[in-house]
Image (cartoon, rainbow, N blue to C red):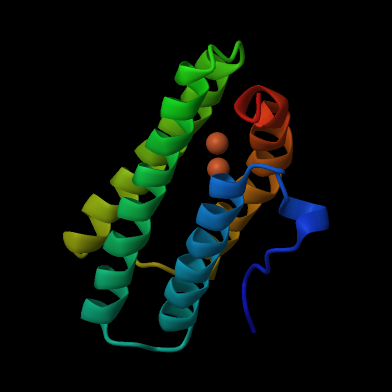
Length: 132
Ligand SMILES: [Fe+2]
Ligand SMILES: [Fe+2]
C-alpha cells in the first residue's frame, strides 16, 4: 500500500508547479518505501534514495526561486524548514552509503510526517504571493 497519496483537499496548494512536483515527489517516496519495506536489493534502495533526495533538493530550490521572485515575506522561515529536512536527508544518505543506516518504515513515516506538516503550514500560504 502506498505510503502517501496526493489529494487536493489534503495537499493542494493552488500553485500549479508545486502540485505537479509534489505529486512526482510522492511517487518517488512511495517507490522508495515499497523497495525498502519489500526486501529489495540494497543497491536499488540506494539508487532510489539518491533519486528522491535529488528531486527534493530541486523542488525546494524551485519554490525558493519563486518566493524570491515574488518578494514573499515568508521566505526565510520557509527556507529554514527546507534546509533542516535537506540536512536530515543528507545525513541519512551518507550513513546509508557507508553501510551505517538503513531505509526502513520509520524513515518513510518521518518524511511523510514532514510533508503532512510542511505542505499545509508552509507551502499553502505562499499561493497568493506566487499566483500574483
Ligand atoms: Fe513543496
Ligand atoms: Fe516548501
